Length: 80
Image (cartoon, rainbow, N blue to C red; front, side, top):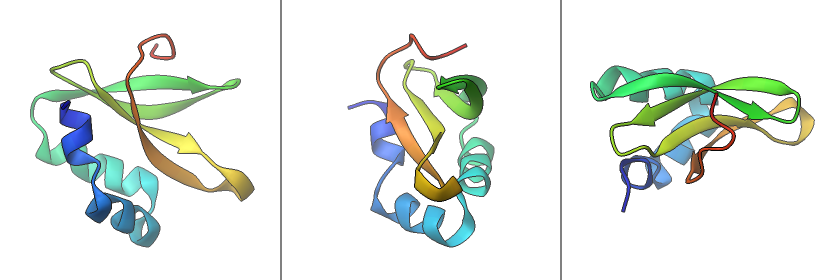
């Protein structure tokens, strides 16, 4: 199980709905000293993400109607 799997639990998903994806991503980054920001490409746009020491990534992903959510990425081809 990766670091991103452990961090992206049901409490974080509820916090995203309450506080917004970007704010939650920043709070995860503040608490995780072993992570650094990455740019993740979705379509033609780039969004914020955090890459952890084990290579796993939590990233902001656009959803329907201009909403954002957090997702875990297992692949590195979208990371810039």
